[in-house]
Figure (cartoon, rainbow, N blue to C red):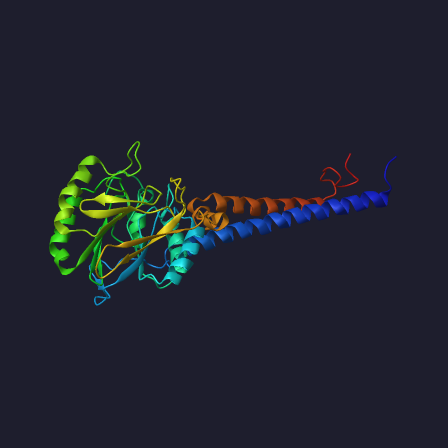
Length: 354
């Protein structure tokens, strides 16, 4: 039995309403996607990113004799751990924060650094933040002079020194998992010129000179470690801080205490300790005091990270938005043509179609 004329008319109107709704939804979604792409392209283009350049060649708080600072590293844009660590570090009264690298995620882009720099700034506020790059912070292992361009835009030159109280802190660039060309020469010149002005010396880098875990070594090449072992004892280092191994351990190297830091977000590689950070106190006299503070493994705010440093890296999102707009407009145009010309046939469109 054929449906009554009023029923067919109702079905036609319902069909037109659904088509209109679909077309409007596509247009609105397309405009939203395009606007979102544009907003995030501009949002993380560097204009609003806090610059976290180190106080290279400067001495902070020159009269201070007891120095207390936090050491973090290996978080790989996992902002959840940074936020928890930041709250605890602020409550512990750290003078500043040292970062031993692996800030970004491979393959990375400068927007990764813009995004994570804002998260770091939110977490630590006015506490000074000094970093050294890790292997995840490089564009590649090749072309050493260009491998750290995105990193350097936010965190500055990878080789530098600064003073805090009567302590000298030196960043040693090991981001290529080797010492850079001329690295030992630069380090020797830096120590020759400045070491005599300070009572204590702290070296911090990403890749350790030796592997304290046993098994297949994951550290600097033997020749680089040998050069450091020959050079550093002359300058009496107090502490040598490294990341990369994702676990807390302590040993001796080149006449100093060598400490590897736990990962703040990347996978923990130790059965004895979890993720976390270190609090280091350098007393006026005596050995450094290193405290391990464990926190649960960090996570990345996936949607926020995707919007901030994935969606805006390719034109795919913008193209999808444009396609949605064009498709929605085409559907509305076809619907209008169908209403104006009853001879334009389509399924359940007009009763005049055969």
